[in-house]
Length: 510
Image 1 (tube, one colour):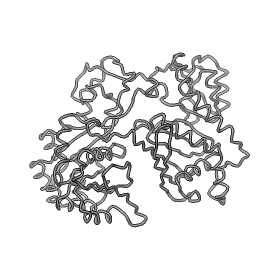
Image 2 (cartoon, rainbow, N blue to C red):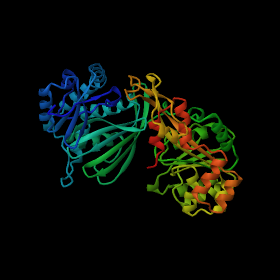
Image 3 (cartoon, one colour):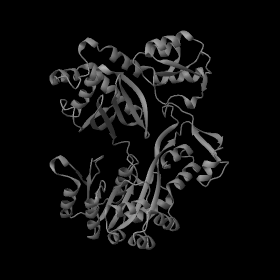
Image 4 (cartoon, rainbow, N blue to C red):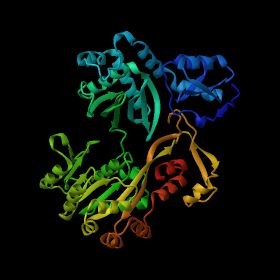
């Protein structure tokens, strides 16, 4: 079209979730069999069953004030995609937005304008806005999203869902609804709707279908308004059984020996969102018994564990990590979990607790297990204290699992170099998810852990004592039998749990 080669997209290249734009009605999409899938830098990319229909392209160009780049696709795949994403829910979204008259006063309140809190509260309490926010939450639950991101931009408010650890653009709403939507969420979370200059945190509890969902709400001011992130905490969906998190049998046995020790420190490391807290909950659940008193200090408390004393820190009233930890030793605990070691003082309290006969669990932000030791040394922890208290360090990542309903063998991988890096060589069968109703046409369903367990033995203690660098510690850990994150990923590829791309996505540091 216009002299440009039209690219044909395979089913795997279709968008995982729908792109919803103000200006393109769902009815128009269904009737004309087009799929918008990217709108960026003034260019709208679409998939058409019949790319020769220039009048549709002209209509889209006029409606969106954008250049239109056309791709083709299999008509049957287009029909399936449209029936999946542009039916009931999206019609509801369109109807709700259309039902909100611009004259009703749903307008963004500029910084220089005086806020009418009462008026804003009235807008947020009206039925269309309530239905709109409820629809966002309902769709997130249906799509198995862990987070809803509501982000204001100059000309729209974008809604994104994090599904299986990956953010997906789902829909957008007109800019004029921004203040009312944010205010509605604040009311639900019992936050101050008049405060738009400072971050706020709150919680919502509600029932969606048969599920009872707890939602953690975070707001923060940005250039175009307030960004809102809603973390969906579904007690039914969390797996706190160590046996089901993706550990190999050998690693699970080693971990079991560590968590049943009478004292010492056990660390779990990894970036935000890598499942560290879930693993710690699983460990606590496994060793919990009436004979043991377990106290946790968390920020925030993600899930409530039966039989465990959990403390939510509240820095605004002076209940922070350090002050809380200094007091809980007087509660006669056997096991202490510290949400995160953030500074030298927290580390020193953890070490002192371990030296006085407590088993201490905590997390640390490092890329792998060996670097946790050097990170603590860099904090200022004395090497002799570290060598005598740390029992083991677990590093982890989360990879998306191939959907069991649509998994299929796609041939033999020709990514020889990539596979050689994993120590596998060529000729390895490749499994992928084709995309189906169950996985939302992503090819993935759920996540599994990749793990790297460093058990501190006498050789590692000696290295720690002399302040050895990360390279020396890693080399000795490998000699002692530590399997790296990449090697654990290799095993999960062999078992057809995940894909090569997924393993490299979470393990590559460049």
